Image 1 (cartoon, rainbow, N blue to C red):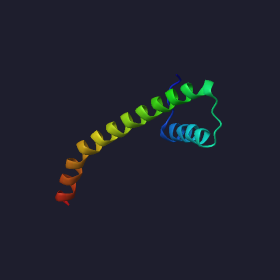
Image 2 (image 1 turned 180 degrees about the vertical axis):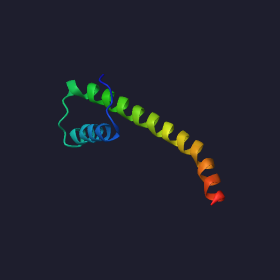
Image 3 (image 1 turned 45 degrees about the vertical axis):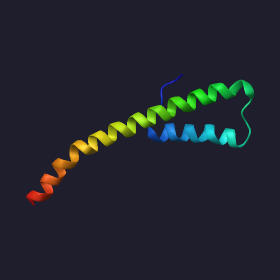
Length: 70
């Protein structure tokens, strides 16, 4: 499996996979490969969301302190 690109690229790729399912464009031979790729993308995006959430939670108290100082 190739690496997942940036957020927009990954979301576009995932949307393309979903669209191919919706349009019935997936052959039985490609089904497993596309499902596996979709899972890789979803997991990567979830990891990014978790990391972003952790950073925001870390920064929020600092921002609150700065706002209180003004």
